[in-house]
Image 1 (tube, one colour):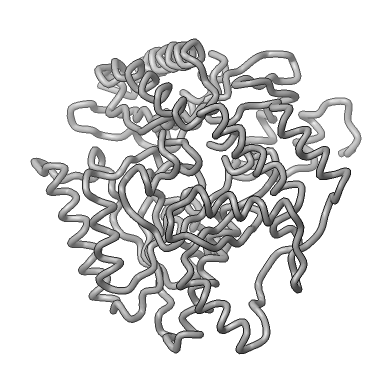
Image 2 (image 1 turned 90 degrees about the vertical axis):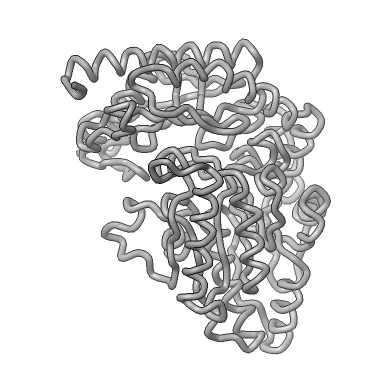
Length: 461
């Protein structure tokens, strides 16, 4: 096959291996080639306009084609296109962004380490805690607690923390010592007749039992997304996070909030930890940090963790970890400008207001015979499709109902994401009332058309 091709789609099929994609199916169907973006919209090579209902990958907070970010990148490219932060080197953009992140985060988080992605950041957190515990004379304190259906990335360590089977299967993961607790989703995993409070109590009892069974002295950290997103848009039950925090304090376990999707206003609050009322020892951020205009992630952590790492680096001569592009000057300059835009335009407040509107307008779908639950918080929503509404019975995954709904979404001009048979929405934080009305109207049509297809295929009785 020729690499040179007049067709972008054909060239892609002949040369690329895509993430999170069935490679053989891709060769058959080809890509949707997106050529430009503007505000909440993106356009394909034929000129068709789509509302980007997932903000790219839960990440383009300020929308597409924000000229202030383009200009910030251009200015930095002209001044200093690249420099590193190894061996006592620094540059102004990363210094100022670290300063800004400390200012806007919970008071106990006083230090910042930059990586290029959330996956790298969570991988780094694992190494940081191993390094810290070795320094503190606790070499056995290396295990992690995570949750089924949690998502923390795809590198070896972060992919091990992730609690999704597709991220483990045939990759020989988990490859680090991690124990996955039950998924805290009341609709799907609450017992018959169990109250939400009872579900929370059961999950906290399970967590404490697991801690005691593993041995608190062996557990380094507990990691979780405040609101679980990629696993299916699952807000925690009432009281869950304060209860988890209490257990971490009781047993000296570092509490890690994975804010890669939740952070910088997505839930209508500054961070998910703030929204749900708990204080992490480490907070991992990415995605909306730069609105994904540049690859960047930031780990925020406490002074106590910094002190242990710093003392050991002095003792052995180095903290032997980092990346060529850690704190890249262009990425950090874009991140700093992006956070200014979020503050100046009150996009956190807009996410709260427009999120409330989005959930009010999606609420009637809860009565649809195909819909088991409509859920979410702020500008994140999930619509779970089920085979039997009263029994909450899911469809056979082999029937690919969620994938069919996703494809119908493209026809309707709305890009969403199916996580199994849950349709996820996470639009840019700049959405207006008109945008929300169009999103919810198109989602309603997607559900109706999927219902017609389900009945035509005789997938329900």
